[in-house]
Image (tube, rainbow, N blue to C red):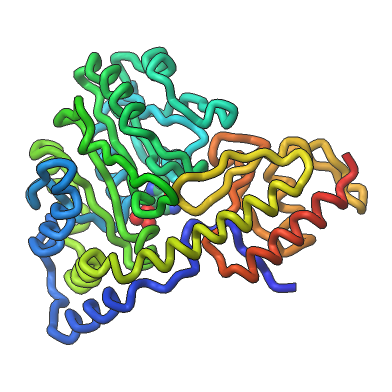
Length: 368
Ligand code: PMP
């Protein structure tokens, strides 16, 4: 039986050929020395151009980082300086946020959002969770794992609440911003009420299938960029120039590459949603962006397997699927949502169809 991985955060797509060619060319041209800490001016100009219609972003507001994870680590390091400082995260949330906080002085505080409320973070819930120690509100938009997209109205309502907290930064992780199936994502940078404490992080791992290249960026006000540049100078220096040339080509030729990938993902989303809809007791939020479905498997917990094993958590359910059906899903426990699991549909269509068959068979075999 072929192993089917629906747990990965990377899509099966190849990186854009234009990116690969540009990187090879840069290597052949000898672009192999230390480069500018902030990132090459040509890449920062290309990134700034992405935001021009929404906000006035200049290359000096951008720091190119070795991935979005590192952008977050950088920001947590410079903004969270005391043990009492809090990072506020609506859950379900990507497990990486939690892992990164293991190495921070501060603590992670969660606000629970519900699938029955379309994972909306209301201004009232935000207000109730904020206090003078909250240093950062971290949003994921489109969200991993739910695929929810915050509307402009929702973001502006959250910004209105945040305005009353002068020590609070808002980070919007927009790494999936080009992976959407309806309306485009509204960047936090384009919202009314945006302040110098609003920060966007983004990268090339998801939209451009370039996770192994390790490249992302921070877009922020001068003061934040100055702090983050100093952190990067002290801990990493500048990103490899050939990687940046590849990323710049990916951005420049995005229109040649993205539509075909999005069409496949959109079709895969229908296939997976259609398959899951046929499984009794399984509920999920229909994602508007990213490439996951985050489904509630709680109806299948407290079950007995055909060989008499019992499990009560989605971790145990996922282990059962992996061991017996060679099907890997990501347990919701890691995203702060026990009972749920995340299924990626960024895999090849025949594998996705086979995964659905295995999931149906496995769940049907359980004695509730
Ligand atoms: N943020 C989110 C929401 C993610 O899902 C991921 C990757 N799974 C990252 C950040 C990390 O991105 P990168 O590969 O650029 O470090």
